[in-house]
Image 1 (cartoon, rainbow, N blue to C red):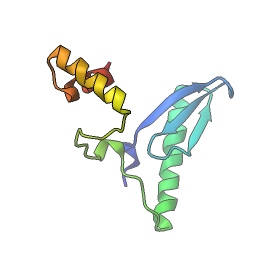
Image 2: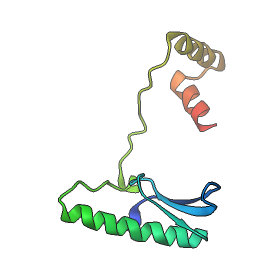
Image 3: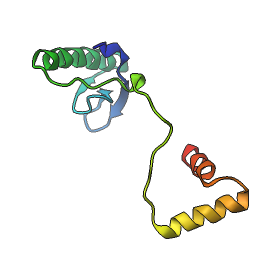
Image 4: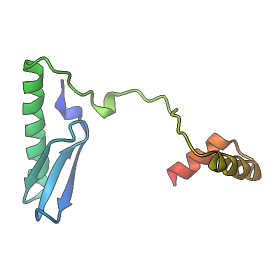
Length: 107
C-alpha cells in the first residue's frame, strides 16, 4: 500500500498549542509538532509505520480516498415536508430536484 496516496492535512490545536497532522483514512492517528511541516512529516511517518504493522498482522488496510471510485450518487432520507419544499423550489426554478439539491450542497 502506498501511504503517499492517503489524504493528509495539518490544522492548529489551540488546546495543545501545536500543529496537528492528520490522516483522513486513519482518523485515530495524529501527530503534534511545533510547525506545520513537522506535523505533516510526523503523521506521514506514523501512518507508514501503522500500515506496515497492519499488513504484518493481516489486517485490512484502508483504501486511499483518492483511489476510490465515486458514482456521484447517494441517497439521503429527509422529512416529507422538506421533500415537498425542495420539489416546489425546483419547480419554481424550472430545474430538476436533483439539480437544485446539488447546487445547494455545493454552496
